[in-house]
Length: 147
Image (cartoon, rainbow, N blue to C red):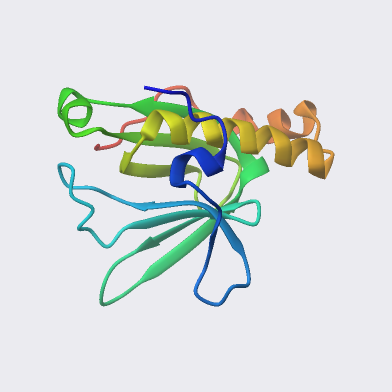
């Protein structure tokens, strides 16, 4: 398996959304086994990560990439067999202190891509480590979530 270090490696090219207003670096949806048949959609564009949930009643939220403090990857045996995994991100965002990309394809490559994009966004915005860590003291190291 080759390393995917850029967003272009994951999907082959940058994608344009339907209205052609923003370049999407990555998008996927939550998988059941290896089938992407859920109504949870994830997208990275414009220095933000977007999460959309629901069919009838839709809910979308976004988080600026530079607000992500910590990224972890969770892959159960079932995830490994199906080629999926869950990326968990702790953020300084008040509305979403923990963002979860559940059961996504190529989860390790997505986690690595996110780490790279987060660092680039922090450099681009001129955010120092002290500014980020001063807001991150409110999180505990242990949290429970169902995967």
